[in-house]
Length: 270
Image 1 (cartoon, rainbow, N blue to C red):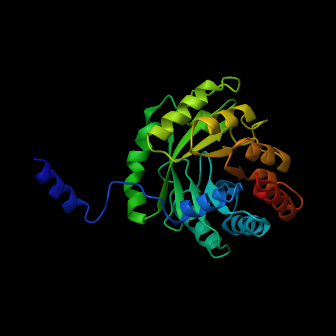
Image 2 (image 1 turned 180 degrees about the vertical axis):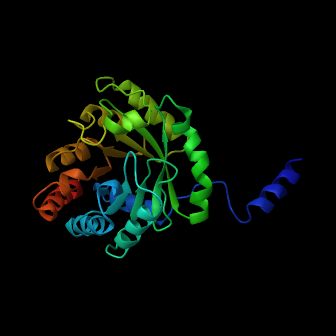
């Protein structure tokens, strides 16, 4: 029976192995981390920009030192809007274009890679495994490099907490996010995003970052509430590996100079 099943699987998925190996983008990120530096990930929300403005912002972030440019948001653009912006951005940068999808429709074949995420502390199974099942075929069809990622949403949560129906992790409870992060590692996820929500008054506590760093070997990504280069530096020193920066660059009078400041803070060796 096992032999028959093996032949059946090979017939349906010729030459494919059921293991998510590290691709070029993840290896590139790992190489930065191995050099004891943080990874500056510039985030652009396609819903907030025209394709031309999004591409201009991406180029500014790239010239300012961003290691990766990301497209994503809690609601997120899709279809032709997302495709057009991604295509133009790719023409203006030479670093990876990475997707931070809000749902199954927020995928474009023009991206190099994406977080294949599970919102582990959602109350709704759709955000834990449902959306992933629906979107997996598209990811395979487009041959987008997928990065196995756990997504944890902390108080106050903001829009993503509402949309993702998250059972928000309390900021003062270090043991809970550590347990989630450790579970993510044992389930084979290599990245964990600690999300406070876009526009949150503060990023996740440094104590939480340090505790997860001590207990796991996953790559720790910080999203939401990082307001200054000094914030970013403190998070890297506490054990974070990657920092998402978006509105704190695009809202500045001189976004290029602000991007350079964040790059300097994030790239400084531990």
